[in-house]
Image (cartoon, rainbow, N blue to C red; front, side):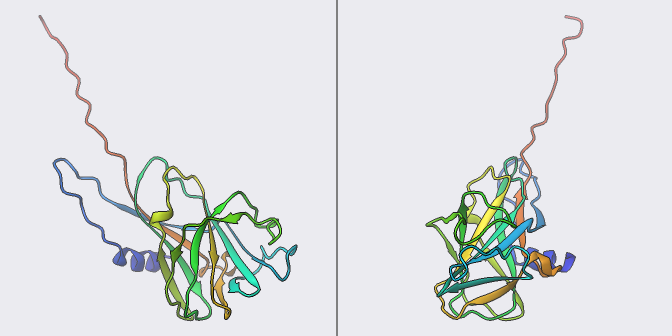
Length: 193
């Protein structure tokens, strides 16, 4: 896990912002997925929440849902990356979107899955048997206590990723934050007026 965080940290631009009195140091933390599942148009009422793989495909449509319990309401978010271990390659890559509604890992199916947000981030080409980091910072609205992402693709070849049930290679969310700025409180006392 430390190696994974170190690799991501090396790819992030960690710079102090210019300005008097700015000495807050960025913090980088990796979160494991708390829930994940894929849903399939070919099996509209089947739940795949216990699968050791996550899938995406265009025909028939297969989407992957991943949820992270991450509290972002009291920090300044600078950078957020989704890390997935790809089991297969995907030339066209996939799209990362927000899930527009609640879902549960053991209850989600294609028939009851939340809608996908219209905004998305494209992953670019995906290599097999490798970590893929996707910058999803622009999807963060601020104040999240839980982040629910959806993956889909326009590729009919499809792809597979490791799910949280697979262990170490499960999905990660790497978040770079800056703690809230604190102001030194000074107290004045009037002695012997």
